[in-house]
Amino acid sequence: MKLRITSIILAAFCLLQAGPALAHSFHVALVIPSPGQSENAGRQIADGFMLATQERDNHPDNKADGHLGGLDVYVHKADSLEKLRSILKEKSIDIIVSIGAGKSTRAAIATMAGDGAIALVPGRLPQDRVGFRSAFQAAYGYEPTELSAQGYNAARRIDAAIRPLDSVDDNAELRKRLGQTAITFNW
Image (tube, rainbow, N blue to C red):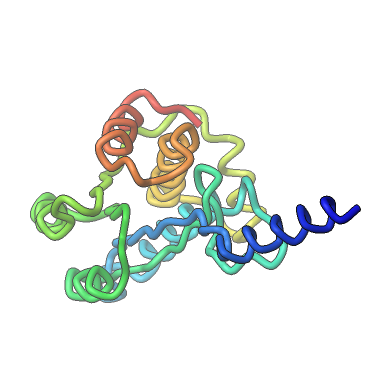
């Protein structure tokens, strides 16, 4: 009996020393067109992206914006390069998603990402989007556009790349997996 109590006390002590479990989460900067360019376009991209974050792995009392790849995801919206710079200074961004941006803006984003964050550009969309259309319309009450589908596609690509890795820690492997989803990915 004394040995059992000692074992329980020792186990409790070890748990207390370990501290709280590390959270499995990551941060995404979602670069969307500014309100001056097209207020509706930014909303469509964000709604498409957020739909995908809510589809899988959600649990009650979640403080994250949703889940991708089995991890909590925090989404930070930037409607300008200045806002993105500010977010990059404040947060440790793992992936920067740019949809609806021109070549020069995407080049600036890639430069700002540097070696730390991965800049994800839109990939090819699948032909069959019926399930996406109905889920989007049910969630947001309006017909999705090509930009909505691009937002959704980006989030689903992130989900597919991270899920087998169970983290965003291996930047090179994550970058490789995201690159593989650009052409051949199908929802």
